[in-house]
Image 1 (cartoon, rainbow, N blue to C red):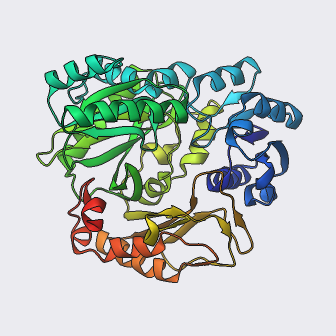
Image 2: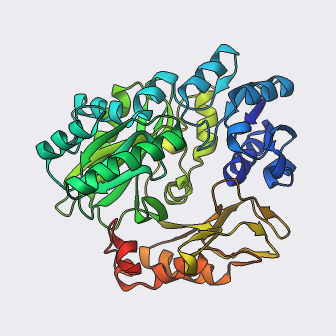
Amino acid sequence: MFDKILIANRGEIALRVVRACRELGVKTVAVYSEPDLESLHVQLADEAVCIGPAAGTDSYLKIDRHISAAEIGDVDAIHPGYGFLAENAHFAEVCASCNIKFIGPPPGAIRTMGDKNAAREAARKAGVPITPGSDGVVESEEEALKVAKKIGYPIMIKASAGGGGRGMRAAHNDVSLVQGFHAARAEAEKAFGKADVYFEKLVVNPRHIEFQIVADQHGRVIHLGERDCSIQRRNQKIVEEAPSPFLDDGLRSKMGRASIKLAEAVGYQNVGTMEFLVDDKGSFYFMEMNTRIQVEHCVTEEVYGCDLVKEQIRIAAGEKLSDHVVKAVIRQHAIECRINAEDPARNFQPSPGRIDLYYTPGGRGVRVDSHAYAGYTIPPYYDSLIGKLITSGSSRASAVARMSRALGEYMITGIKTTIPFQQEIMRNADFQRGQYHTGFVAGMRS
């Protein structure tokens, strides 16, 4: 096991890793930008190093700053969390060159599966279903129109290096295709430093289902079931749950086997997530892979009774998959609501600022992963996620009822949050029946 780990991230995921390390008896080094000095992960880590000013491009995205902090802290390994450098193959390579273990997959797997177009090709070669689409990157308007004519509308334009719903546009005709092509390229260039986009046939109102992969360095690959992430706003997840109310045992088994097959084909190690679109007939199509821990990993932890962050660390240290992870089975139902500093009444406008009162819900089957506290100031420079509220129960109905109760107890004043919107979702009759898809939120707000 490692002696000391640097956490190359911030917010609730950095705090999550600090806690996992503490339980493993591993010391931690936190990094922080200047406005994050008072963040909980900084206060609870064993050591902390400032790596720059507010802008992520001048701090959390600077590889050399993380490596310098790692050398100052004399660490054995770096945990990248999610976002920022978590899926940066070059960062993983630099870590290796400095004799620092990167707690994640090998650089080659990150590079292959981190490029959405290359990942689709890997899936095709592995025999995993993919949606019809372009044969690689679409370079020009002229090529875009030719590809659209070949695969037919509607079409989804997607950034090759994309994530978090950025660099994505739907097109239903030639006019919206050309507009969306340029808009997606511009957004992708700004967000990822790479303007490349590719096209997929748009599956109308599908389910967004992802499978949790766990793989060690000894050739063992398993999956820990699925999470249903279909409740989304502008392609960003809002509510996640497991098991999915849509999947039966047969489809779950089939998708799980496909996920393992693809992970094995690319030599995957550590944890990762295979993401699929599933239509109303039960046909599924590989969409992308996230080569990191997911925001919503806690849902799987509650359903299967395991700790995925600890397992990440153990795998990176060369250990075989834990026996309790290999033998894990579905124990209960779990739901997660992402609590963001946004104002639902003003088109989800960001609401940074000082939190005056912060009270988290409790009781049986309630979990809160958050770095916020009374007096903490939400900075305007980063993602608006305040925390994640997870409830679990012996049935889906009990988990939903518990979530409704817990949202009512969650008190945050001084800023606006998405709690009222989450409560609206929990009260929705279609959601309560498990009848929803990726167009659910748009239908609610129309």
